[in-house]
Length: 473
Ligand code: HEM
Image 1 (cartoon, rainbow, N blue to C red):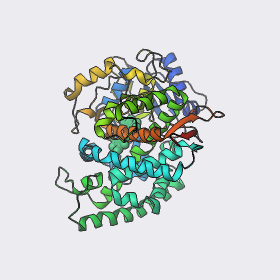
Image 2 (cartoon, protein in one colour; image 1 turned 180 degrees about the horizontal axis):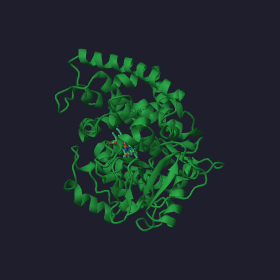
Image 3 (cartoon, rainbow, N blue to C red; image 1 turned 45 degrees about the horizontal axis):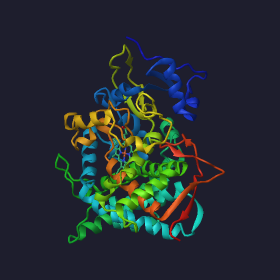
Image 4 (cartoon, protein in one colour; image 1 turned 90 degrees about the horizontal axis):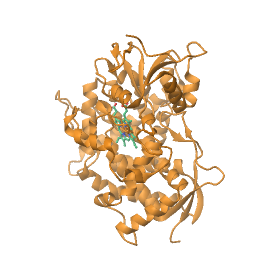
């Protein structure tokens, strides 16, 4: 038995950080061709063992918690941002309960109520910001603002939405500044942003604390948001959440959805503009299903417009927001079907983005083709069959997908995303509303922006400009 091969590097300690950091996808593909599905590289003293292919994905997502875990890989990055006692700052079984709480709010019943709110917020935004008949717009900036407003309004509740403009949004931005690869790498550096995070948290605790107290005082109103679930949930050990835990969970879940959903919406609009026929086809399908005057869709209507869902799915294939899934090895672990053993202290890095762009699984993988999702692929069928049969981590079968799938934009296993359906509904509803009112084209000079790999979530290079033209002037 041996360790996976080490990628050769010039500079001691720093290792392959530069080549990996600038073009991670190229780095992974090149080294895969040289070393196979498993190899280790050095990055600022950290040994990263890359695990690729469907087997590599599955190994990382399903590795035993006794040998491999997410909290040791992520907590130094997420604790200053999310705050204490939530997500990776609690034992894994507590995280499982916190995710279960999130799921309680993310039901079809609630989605039905959220959709009109998302439409209303989008129209408010259009009225304020897309005021001309034709103009250019920084679409990433616009979409990010829309995502924070729609997520706050639906998941956090009306009180927090109402306070977004009185400083809450800025406090989130302050926290966000600490969510970067630098903060992952330099855990021992006293970066000034950590101090800013503490100040922002103190402020948010005050604001959220007051909202929580006000809600407790009024017993006559009923709320269908996550805040309500967090405030009323009783842990298996009989304890309720403290106000601090409620606040930090709200921040954590909002942050988990913010850049991921903003990136997905922006990349969807960019891909559509870059393949302009698709906008016309989508608009035609919207009219076919909803009628010529295009009334806004309800929950059931979204399913009748498969292009919306296929566009989001295809965007998550070609431009997945998360391309690195990290875990830390705590006990030496053998990689199945190989002779390799990964030693403790190494990190595991899996990247479903690699299998998502392989011709073995996707015909003409470089092309943006939402229509490829019109027929169910073999791996989707396998996932459906597995359904309940796979390990259930306590929050329903959709969270326990096989991980043997080449398409995993929401991860798999115990850390799988709980926000998939919400994200789909949010992004599809925003896309419908924007396309109902506007046509979009790429900025001719800039063309299609490239991915920027300098953040934890892969965004288009800034500024990300689109041209919009109002329909039915
Ligand atoms: C976990 C992607 C939206 C909440 C994850 C993971 C991925 C992911 C890949 C797995 C991380 C890992 O295994 O290390 C996405 C994408 C989104 C999205 C692509 C949008 C398009 C959301 C939203 C929410 C959310 C809207 C909340 C409402 C979470 C939570 C976890 C998670 C709580 C669990 C973390 C864990 O167990 O370690 N997401 N996400 N996500 N996501 Fe999402």
